[in-house]
Each structure stands twice: as structure tokens, then as C-alpha cells.
Image (cartoon, rainbow, N blue to C red):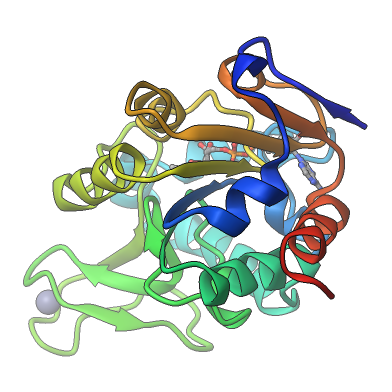
Length: 249
Ligand code: OAD
Ligand code: ZN
């Protein structure tokens, strides 16, 4: 079902705007990976239902209960490794191939956009497949490790290379994301509840900079209200249809 946001005076037809756009920026959230079987945070089967997320995905847990915290992250990475990109990920990778300038900003840490062929993905919240050393700052890929990974360079305990609850995002990443929002013609928001900042501020920045803002989500969110056009539906269905409408099958 398609609804036009309150600010639809600039009219709909997202497919036409994508086709003629010079610069497209996309912001995704957990909803884009839901159809790959990766739980969202706030949905009915969301990770947040599991109290452990609150306790384990935190700097305190890593400090005081590193084994338990890492056990949860290894479990979650195992879950993600079983997942495959879905048609929404591939549709976004196709948009990147079709438009002159494209930037994908994701809140997801699952790496599925890159596996679907998206390039230069800006991972606002990091990536669950990497570990970072608190001692020397080196970042390494995680494979089948168990337990608390230790840095081979300086021997310190490592942490998941993701933004933990209560932590700030990397300043450089935020600057990149704000520029991508402020300098695009079309800003597409896909599969996010739009309640976590600074990501949730990006659609407003795009809109104030004159971009056409569209939202694709399984249910209305606060961002639907600031959008020029919003689609309520599964992104694995809406996005492929949108791309086919813009550039053919
Ligand atoms: P949420 O779980 O908060 O929101 C996911 C959104 O996707 C919800 O609005 C769902 O209705 C929608 N959704 C679910 N399945 C969908 C589908 N198949 N098609 C379209 N929409 C669908 O996840 P995020 O908004 O990504 O931060 O959460 C933002 C951040 O909150 C996460 O990155 C995480 C968490 O704290 C960190 O880990 C730092
Ligand atoms: Zn180190």
C-alpha cells in the first residue's frame, strides 16, 4: 500500500525521480535484512525482546563480562552468517549501478549490502564481522573465533567493531553521512524505525537541502511524516518493483 507523506505537495513518482536523479543517498535499517532472517531490534521478534541485548551490547558488559558479551556477539554473527542478501539488498545494489552518484548509509552491522554487491557502503554502526583493538586500534576480520579475541599486534583484548549502546558514532562517518544527505536529489529511507540518532536526523537534513525524501517501511514511522512519499510494505517487494518501474526488469 502506498501513502504519500504529509509533505506531498512536491508530488510522488519516486521511480521517475530515481530515473532522473544525479545523486541518490539511501539510509537503511534492520528492516532491509528482516527478509534475510536477521531479527530486527524493535519488531515483534526483535533482538530487544532479548533482555540480554541491553545488558550485553554495552561497554560495561565488555569490560566486566567479556566472555558473556563476546558469546552473544559470536552467536549473533553466526546467525548473520546463515543469512543471505534478499531482493531488497540487490535492488539497492542495482540503483547504485544506474545513477551517476550514489551513497548507501546503513545502520546495519550484518554486511549484507556488500555481499549483495553494494560498493563503498557507509556502515554507521560498524560491522559485526570485524574486531577492533582497544590498545593499538587495529581492526581485524573475525572468522570462526570463539571467546575473547586478543590482538596479535599488542596482545590487548579486542572488542566488536560495532557501536555499542550508549556510544557515539565515529565523527568522520557522521560527517560523510551528513554530506551525503545534504548533497543528494533523492533520499530513500528503507526499513528503519527512525528513532535512533544521529541516523534518524539524516532524512530531515536531506529534506531541508531540497532532496525528495521517500520512505519504504513495513509500518508508518516518524520519518513517514516528513517524507514526500512513503510506501508501507515489505522492502523485499517494494524495492524490486520500484527499480523495475524506473529502469525496467
Ligand atoms: P528497528 O528494529 O528499530 O526498526 C526496523 C524497522 O523495519 C521497523 O520499523 C519495522 O517495521 C521495519 N521492517 C521490518 N521488517 C521489514 C520489511 N521486511 N520491510 C520493510 N520494513 C520492515 O531497527 P533500526 O531502525 O535499524 O543500533 O534500529 C536502529 C538502531 O537501533 C540499530 O542500528 C541498533 C539499534 O540500537 C546499534 O546497534 C548501535
Ligand atoms: Zn592491539
